[in-house]
Image 1 (tube, rainbow, N blue to C red):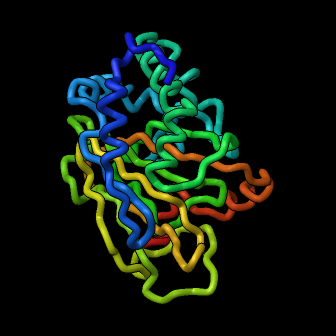
Image 2 (cartoon, one colour):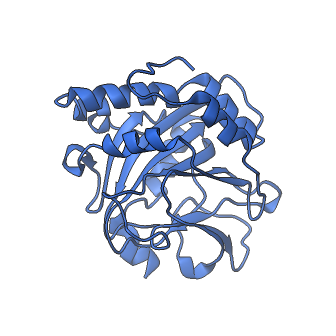
Length: 265
């Protein structure tokens, strides 16, 4: 992994051990939970480097973001750290270096390996800093067709939600199986919670995206945030898919909190 250690001294040996020692669980779909992903010192540095929310791009009433690595199928240049952090050089340098680290081929390969996903050179990464404020929430969904693996790294700390349970990610299975599913966000009342990944500091939740292979679907979501801000780094590994397919999928997907009341009351 080629990046500037002076800007964020990641202990790569420690990180590699944390990743390789993680145990894969397959129920209800393949996932990993890794606590203390980074050293305590680096995690403190991460928290201290989170830009204030007024520097992030507001994409809905309760969701803001800063793009670190652009989504190959759907992104907005105005959301990039390259534009949003130009007036704060120290933060720009930190997140530029961290984005290079996340986007390194060796990290992508290791992440695919721990999830037991066959890998190729055609896979790409996307990543963003996510500010999910009071009132935000995501109903049960599987993730898009182009995503082979998804990751949520919790940035729990002084700026974020104060409760672990309130902002946890739920792993879900439908109460009644259907022959097919769309890419919308469903109602929680239609699903049973198998596991709740509590919102804890320095915790990574990683899973393989499943869209019906052998009857397995990677349905997940989190309920409406009632206090504070659910800070996280969300990143995905993508495969090559026809762009028009993804554009149609995005258009049909209800993503943000403005859809919460109609979809999840």
